[in-house]
Image (cartoon, rainbow, N blue to C red; front, side):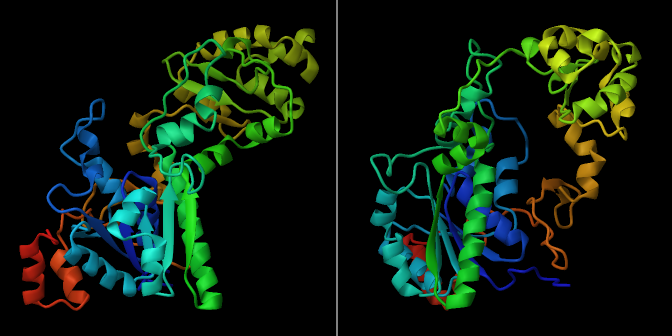
Length: 402
């Protein structure tokens, strides 16, 4: 058992914000990497202020920072100052991974492009994340997951209830966290390459590419010229056994029967509608699809007679594939999340946080530590980089270090 994590001893510089790139660093930290969060003095990483934006949940806790900055050490460093640039260059020379999502013009201005940093350390993995890729007319265009991942990919349009419905908004971080896993995978692949060659490299990912990857089979269908059918509202869906239904208490569940020829009798029994099993209107799969609107109406009436908890008891253990349409209120009491360490407590605390979705047998993950205050570890990081007290005081006097 590796008690310190697979990446124990790995030095990572997180020079990024909002959200995918820093989240990739968080996953590295979960497996033991030492992640130094580099943020500007005075205001810090702008992401610290996310919960203060209109419409976000109101809390005494900075829940956004708790999730994305756990385990990290904060160095408040002004990269616009020559002294700040020099500190960063010294840290890069001994780092394993440098992560940034600054737009290319900002990287050039601050001297943190791959061309700037790679010569300082031949073993450096430089992880670059952008909105729209690094070539073409939109290379310097800023983007968030709501526009570059969700809207650009077609998903925003595809999830509408029907063609006349308003496009659906995404929720905060919905695309960033899957994108973080892509960047994490790229970093780990580059580390494997370094093990074989001894050389570092630049790895890249972007919101736009991840969005199309998430649109997946439908995007591929369009690429081969497939003929698409108009999107139909739930009440007129083409398959009643792959649809969602409202229960008596207002909660929803979704059926996902792919092997419906075999499971149709089981489903009708679970629903207490054995009369449907041999009903000639729905005798075959083709019949059920041809009369899907009629069958959806019957299912709507049936599911409305009992609460979600009752239907879960009726369906669980039967082999019927279904899922609860979860709400956030469910999370804290979901025993399956806790038993599988999807939710884990912070170190020396009972407050829960969301674990990164990877586990490796025989290697422990770091117990989440609370996120750092702005510049909380500046002196500590600088001393480990070879700066004495006088030099640190000089950096503070210059304003390069907060």
